[in-house]
Length: 430
Image (cartoon, rainbow, N blue to C red; front, side):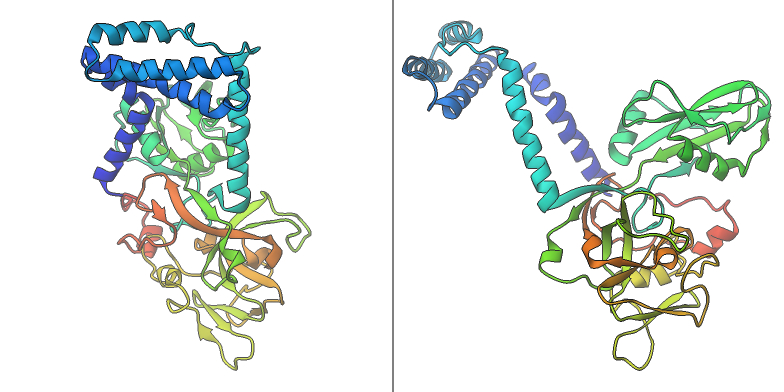
């Protein structure tokens, strides 16, 4: 994402958090007085607009008189001394007659909370549902929680940590082993007390315990990425260095399925209700996200890394490609982490060239773009129409190159197979 746009977004966030208070420090005395009078006027105008029909007549008259006085105090022709006197008179609220309410702050905040929750749940249920990518099954189209290693020591400071998290969901870590020992992957446990939205875990190396960002499963994965199934480290060795990124957060459009049927190539969010693996085991997690590749009546085959389809009524198979959706061209490109579609030996269907599967009526076949690391329809077959929730509309966080409309970014310019053969090739910045 453009750095100028990221900087603009950062400034916008800071302005909403502290901007008004900060800027008023530079106001002139007259401007500061006028701004405070305007704040009080807005408050009384809101009370009158909201409660005029239930307020006694004397309270309405008192509010209207206060509003007239506050407007007069803000006029340019009013002297500064008169404006300050007006502010002092109405700052405490003692000059305005209002009914005495028990716990007014609690009741007002409760009303606001009820309205806000009603709007949020209504929008979520009918229009836009927030969704966080949980795993790496759709990488590099959409990223789940993942660890980005760093080759050089990190220069960490509070400013870098804050903006790294604000812009890219990064939680930095640069931990050096203080004493010789073996990395105990089996003994990783959550840190207590737990901090909401910022889970951490404890890992033992010899007799020393280290606190690392992420849940135990996440920490175990990135330690295995660094050290395999376990390793003996010496004092001064790096235990882990890099950043844990929390994955793409997006809005799911729940409305488009009311106007058109799903199409081949759409990325879809769906619920796993009633979907089980071949052994009868239910899927972990209620919401999944995959690419819809098979429509009702399609016969599918994965052949040499590519997907072929014989549509209902057709005589021959054809390659599923960019004509169906641009995402298929990216998947076949073998660039930027894409590696085509793979056969999985323990899958239920499409286990090798020549093996086909026909999608039943009212069902859809789903595959992850990160085919070698995706639990998808190859293992649990199909998704009923009623399970479909919607398609990703907008990646709203982090502010990476994927920020914006989903499924539009071209692959990074490196060969996927070269990276797999030689992991020492430095990563390309996302």
